[in-house]
Image (tube, rainbow, N blue to C red; front, top):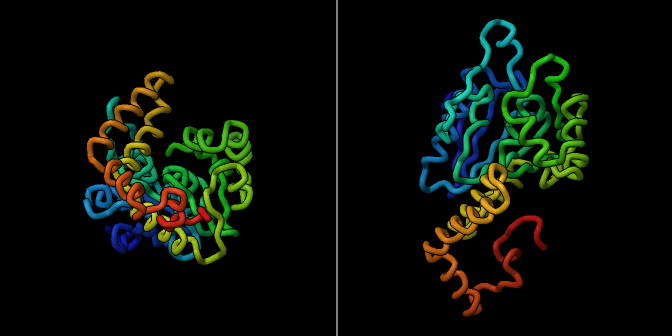
Length: 273
């Protein structure tokens, strides 16, 4: 860890914090490397189930540190081998080429622009404050997207919305981002971290074998034809069933210990009433 990146843990939830408020949490090479290391530590921590990524000081991240870049101290520019390590740490923004086995939730405050937008897109879910702003403001500097923005954004919001954001570089507010599917929750100012951590805690209490199985299938299906994706889902599902988790859960519901009808409310998942 470094002074600009550190983690705080509460039970099964690990919050990774970007703390360079003087530069709107932009990432130079050292900070990007430290962020990647923080998520490797989360992935390898067997007691950690869900992570939250949050920016201190009023901004999520305004992307690459342009001062460092213009001074010849740019971020990493490389691409991994044909079959890269899922914990590869060579992306310009640090962890954006990683494929973790556990969920990450972005708690978005202030700016999530340029590479910061790409960091938010890398996360599984995004909780944004009402006054948060998303955008590809790298359009103005002439920098291309190299941290998955042109891949993940169309998959989240569709090609038309994605091109509108990418080609114009215009700012997108939280409510518009919610309407197009870029954001999952909009919360009042100064509560994104708390709300994201509450959501993370709720997810961490759900049966993890089936959750991980379904999450893996969702990500892997993009690379597969339909029939192969269906088979892959079945393979993941059989592994989850072999854990015995589903049988235990079914027994609890059958015995009335857990109500299937009220499952979401009992699990405490925000957004389910």
